[in-house]
Length: 168
Image 1 (spheres, rainbow, N blue to C red):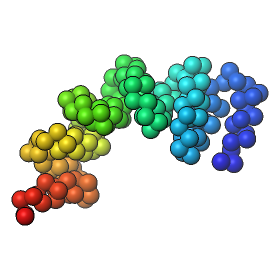
Image 2 (image 1 turned 30 degrees about the vertical axis):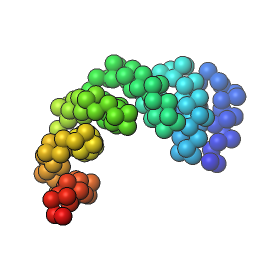
Image 3 (image 1 turned 180 degrees about the vertical axis):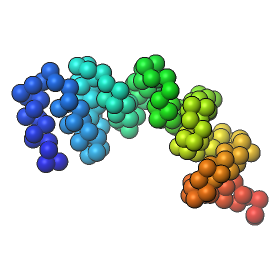
Image 4 (image 1 turned 90 degrees about the vertical axis):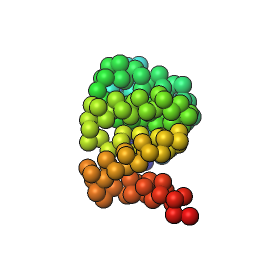
């Protein structure tokens, strides 16, 4: 927050430079001031559409409920960087929130195919499978996660949740 006046001054002095817009956007993002972050990331992206600017723009759009805009931004990122697993994962999470489970599963599968140890995508795939009623497939994913990371608390909780109805 102490940096805000410096970034604002930098924007006034050199509005054509994307970095100050981006840096102030990051501050606003951390403050959860989504509309301000979106505006700053958008301005930075208009000047120079860097990968990190677009990635943060998509995340801010999603947090602000601008799902269509977030989807478009993530798709642009994936068009530019087809193997960027965090974009696949985040877009998959967006689709899960919209209950577009087939699209979400496809993106999580793609992320896992790109990096089989990417636990965020594997965990989100398992949660999506549970949400869509594919409990057996979800259990397999949770077990696979524990084979990679035996201490993964989310996978352990997922297994407990699946097993709980059988215990009653």
